[in-house]
Image (cartoon, rainbow, N blue to C red; front, side, top):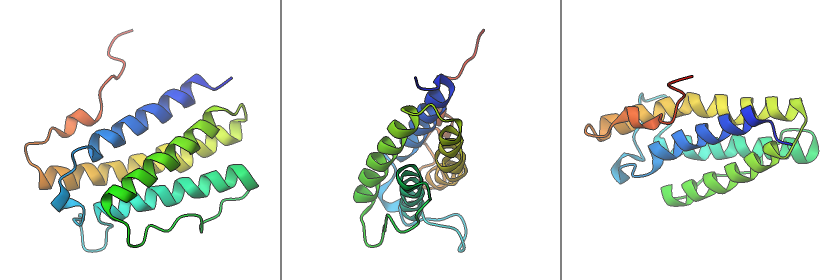
Length: 144
């Protein structure tokens, strides 16, 4: 049986990411926060690269950093790859009862995703001032 907390956190992290990238301004995919930081498109490719390394960890027992190459892909292709690779990684994590696999899901997917989610939010907010950045997080527990 899947761990309900892990399942929830994986789902909500993905929902937040989708809320940022759905409707992302086409002209902003090449934007970054600083000259040294990744562009929005590079962040999407980078996240997929890390998800692929996590899948390799699950399949072989060792993370492999050569499973995904985002070079030359359009934002649409990067998003499709991200969603498919993330879906598979999430299914594998949810299907496991091993705490170490759950820990890996939190590290490789959720924690890393949240770090880059903040960057994507700032890039989009700058490119699209009327976008509601607070809309990224909804459905939080507000009452007990």
